[in-house]
Image (tube, rainbow, N blue to C red; front, top):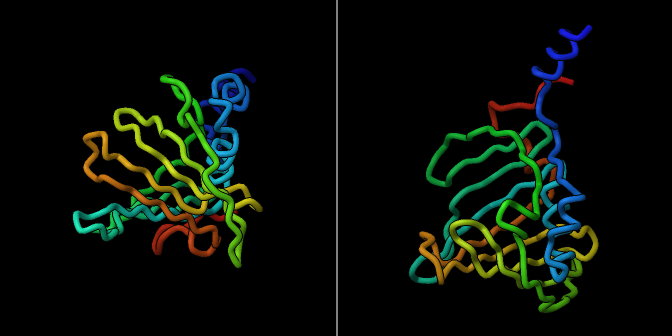
Length: 185
């Protein structure tokens, strides 16, 4: 029995959906960032979500940099200049890392009502090593998921001054790319 148990532990697959460490979160997070952290976890715990990342050009216009599709099987990423998709496993969702909280100094900037959703607009500091950024996030008041984020890297050596992420929660849009499919159940 022991060899079988050991073998089953070795060959088991990573979890199909991401996990997060709730105990670690509650001890180390910046208390001002509860809504932002909860939105981050809710966003990346969604079974299927597409994230398109844009960067700012010198003239202020935005250009698509990459697309990421999160599905039940994994994460599919593609640079805008490429036709090749890379498949990865979805990792854990952490709002705290070895250097401390990912988000700090959060402030509710504005609550707005739109035709499709009520949005909560927060500012924060995004503590990503080695390039921290001023961070803004628009969170759906209904789903508590991020709809859009903006990171301002003007005080770092990051290659782009501004990065914008737009989130799409239509499950059909987050299907694996053509030629890459989910396994049969």
